[in-house]
Picture 1 (cartoon, rainbow, N blue to C red):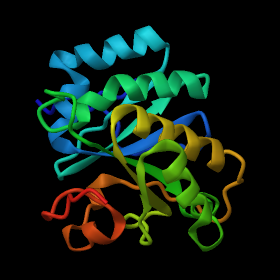
Picture 2: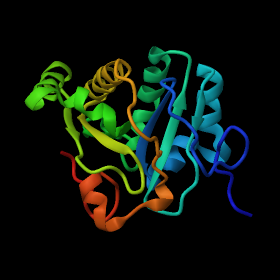
Picture 3: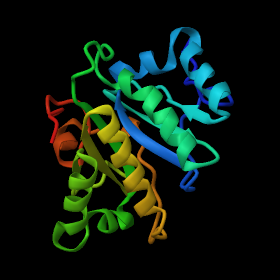
Picture 4: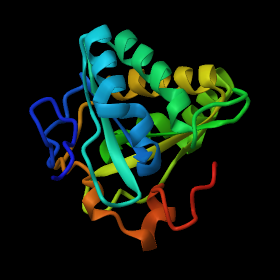
Length: 203
């Protein structure tokens, strides 16, 4: 029997979203199990503890999309901090490894994070201590771009907050086509910030 994709209502294949209550991350498939937990135990605990919607739909490729919906940005960030250690392959052992978080944002909002001549992204790097990079290509067959944040747990969490605060001030322009990891393209992974293809290098 095919495994449940751990959506709220059974298997989830298509993401219908783009409200600012929902934040989505691109994660490597190999860490999905540690986020979900045995029989869904970890994800169920997070859902009940934070009264949030958290989904990691199943996908056969090297990457998946993690969606978090909660009532406010603080709750979302608490969930992100809880999940962060699982995003290091095999879990955080010594706690010294850099985390590599990839946030999905609509392409029309990338400019507000980059700023004029890159001024804003430079300011964010200095303010949070995280290394930020926005990939120039959209994820395959979508209107979403990857914001990569690399650094320690607190720096990355601070970076996620800053990016979310910024993009919420900018209305989405143009069509919305959410990234479906079933459309993963190994050839372009390095260009859009995807996982796999041996191109999983921190920025």
